[in-house]
Length: 119
Image (cartoon, rainbow, N blue to C red; front, side, top):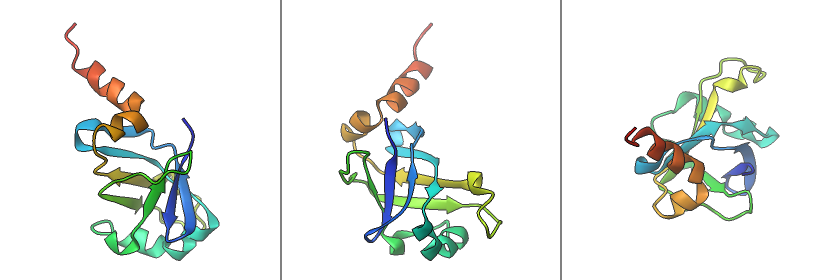
């Protein structure tokens, strides 16, 4: 699957493969790859991990369809002002309902089910 796009208003602020997930919780997350526009919200994302609802971040599928979810948060733990420690920045998409979650992230569902198979 391709990269999901993260938006602040109409500005593309970053992308992520959303390579990890918790299907029962409806959560998908992954490494955040910032665009130049991220600089406008970076301070908020670095200093406020508790409630970023004021940013009203949105996520779109690789095909450009907005994902219905409870919220999106960018957890920026970087300390380098140049962004050289970007591996410390993660995006989380919260509260994606089922069945859309399973359609968007089938690999997360398969991995979850594999953990509970009786062997």
